[in-house]
Amino acid sequence: MPEESSVPRGLLDGVVVGLVLMAVFTTAWSANTLGTWPGALGTAITAVGVLASTWFVVTAVRLARTRGRASTATTPEEQRWQKRAGMAFGWVFTAEAVLIVVAANVLGGIGRPDLVLPAIALVVGVHFYPMARIFRRRIDTWLATALSAVGLAGLLVLLLTSASRDLVWGVVACGAALTTGAYGVYFTRMATALRTRARS
Image (cartoon, rainbow, N blue to C red):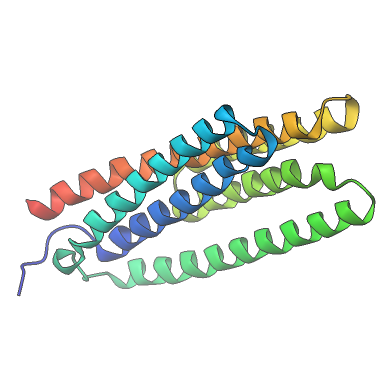
């Protein structure tokens, strides 16, 4: 049986999940440009997003392979925190999904489906603010601010100017992909550090 390392299994699992989620979201956001910016530009942006996402998934798999050596020892305080954090994450994620569905339906109902994508970006951005408190990560606040600004800017441009939907959606999608990609890079660096600790 492999000897346990100093890496907490809960932390390792969280980083693996984070990498997979950022891979999915980075691919999804970058792929939006295929419809808004058809041709070489959209294809190139999507390809970069897919490559980055592949890197995140490979990193997640490599980290997951060290799970058997991760420490399962937790204090009662850590157990309580993990339970609270898990429940809070579930509530925030659920609220995010509900708000996205409501926003899409309301905007479609009032004849402004062009506002849906930037509205989604705004909701996703705002949801990172409570995540910063739940998981005690400063990067969530920075990413929340960046993505919220991208979504809000997209909404304002479409509401106040004659800019085309495709142009705005493409820019918003790129901004969102860069944000989730940056989060993926953050998790990748964490994964590298955890793998180093697991081997020591």
